[in-house]
Length: 112
Image 1: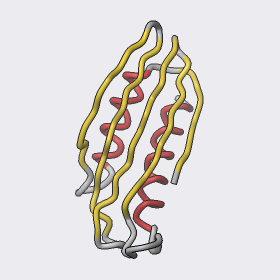
Image 2: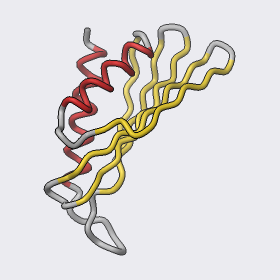
Image 3: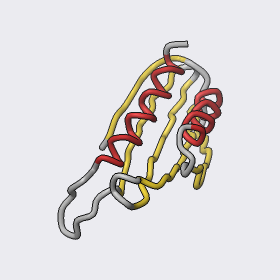
Image 4: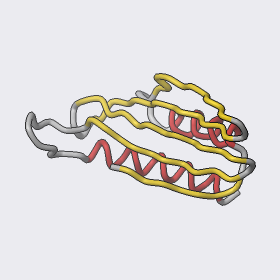
């Protein structure tokens, strides 16, 4: 699953908001890794979150990339995991729920 958003705001403010919203939204959610890269005026903040999916009985990952140039933000969200099948994806309820939570948090920040 993949979603994108574009709006103006603070990249660090968004990253901090997501850290709180995503890890606070589930007892099993955690921030697994984070990194920041800069190139000239561009800044990219990358986050990887993980949580246990009760629906799928497995762990699900959420990847967030925040690209900032000035106050313009481009946000990419992607989920992985959450399937029980060996050769194709079935039962992606966990992925969809994690993505919904992330999109809700990003949209709430973008509308402040």
